[in-house]
Image 1 (cartoon, rainbow, N blue to C red):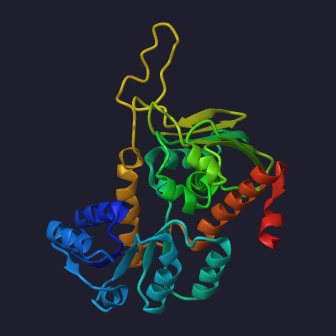
Image 2: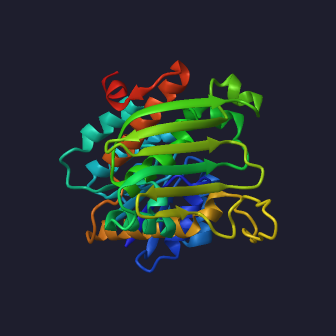
Image 3: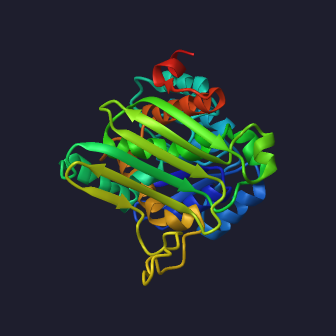
Amino acid sequence: MRIGILGLGRIGAFHAETLSGLDAVESLVVSDPFADAAKAAAERFGAQVADSPEAVLAAGVDGVVVAAATDAHPGLITACVDAGVPVFCEKPVARTMAEGVEVLKAVAGRDVPVQIGYNRRFDTGFTAARAAVRSGELGTLHTVRSTTLDPAPPPAAYIAASGGIFRDCSVHDFDIIRWVTGREVTEVYAAGGNRGADFIKEAGDADTTGAILTLDDGTLAVVSNSRHNARGYDVRMEIHGFTDSIAVGLEDKLPLRSVEPGVTFPAGVPHDFFMDRFTDAYRAELLAFTEVVAGSRPSPCTIEDALEAGWIAEACTLSLHEHRPVTLEEVRQA
């Protein structure tokens, strides 16, 4: 098949490399506002360069991968759907929930699949955790713990435009909690602090946060996030049931150091970058998209899924600023 790529920054170039190595992909058509980025991708992967999104869609592509700036996501998603071309778009759907809802309305009832990029759904550990929960082998759940700790903050310009840590970082935890447990979040309580980079506090954001999510069956999910984790990139999940408990991420590249006498685990070089931690998941995610394009599977992460994670982020942001529990219904009606 022939796949278009819109946006060739860090993640777009990474996707181009991944797609070029998939057996199902015969050729790529790439476009970026910066001509040098498109030219570099064309030279590296033998791709055709198009000078606009419209030109990509006119080039006979079977599917499109959107890795452009967030502000462009709504227009590019709807343009692909209008053209009848299946589209994969990196999260978020839009910068605001109101815009995201408008995108959902614009594509509703259309027979063109849209897949949103939440790569943890394709990680082998999280996939195994979901299977364990769904099989019932853990018994009734009572506690879930989900962690995302970045080794260092992103640049100040990114922080200023990201919408906050819950919207750009924790949202991955929110999505994977829904996906693994199969439950919905009904209420949140969030807290945060600033012990690191001043520019994060100046942007009105927190650099370290904790949130308690109440799921619709009474299970409690505890989410921990930070922009500062000197030992590396730490992504984990614990799931505790009345029959058994399991963990995702307890492997030799875990960026933690044990101080127990005689304990050598973890013994590997810690993960220090999200692309390192999730290389295989990103490949599996795009392989799944080629199956969506081929019509052999439905979208594994819909716009509706992405918006649900977004509503949880909205509730946590409000809870952080107002120091109180917030229900999901409250933010939906705001």
